[in-house]
Length: 79
Image (cartoon, rainbow, N blue to C red; front, side, top):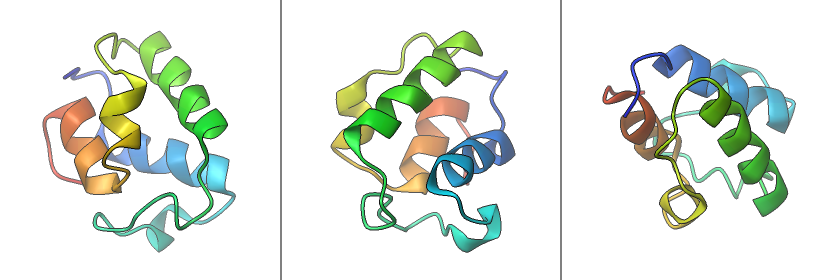
């Protein structure tokens, strides 16, 4: 958990890689269904590690690819 990442930043970063509006992503959405793949997940992990979320690992995100889960994991807050 890292406080440098906000729920808004997590949502915006995911939306950017999916080329969609952040408002189109609901917390319960499966991001794989939106077209997110393992390469993009790794890109997000690298971006978030650079922002200070050093504890995030690929399995943490890939096993439960919902925006709400990722947001809670990364920020300690709801999406």
